[in-house]
Length: 135
Image (cartoon, rainbow, N blue to C red; front, side):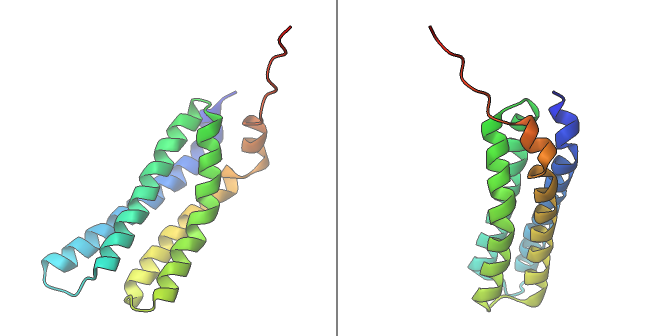
């Protein structure tokens, strides 16, 4: 089974998610360094989103080598994290609109990655194999 080819679209989208998350964190750092108002919550959210991107990308590396456990974690992250990003940012209400829009763009890219990650081709490739019968 060629997991590299099957996971390529998802890995690219997860990498873009990570680049966007890094850009958001970089912007928060730049604004903070230039004296603009940046809250601790913005720092925490930016770091958490970047951390989830890094973890997801690391899992994709294990999945390329056939690790079913890593693929399953990618499935969970790709479905749970995007709505969590949007929900927390929207409900907090104290965040600047630019921050919410940038975080939402991260969520959209990760949600796009969820399509191939949870698609039938990858699910079939990572199907649980029955344990060998011992005599």
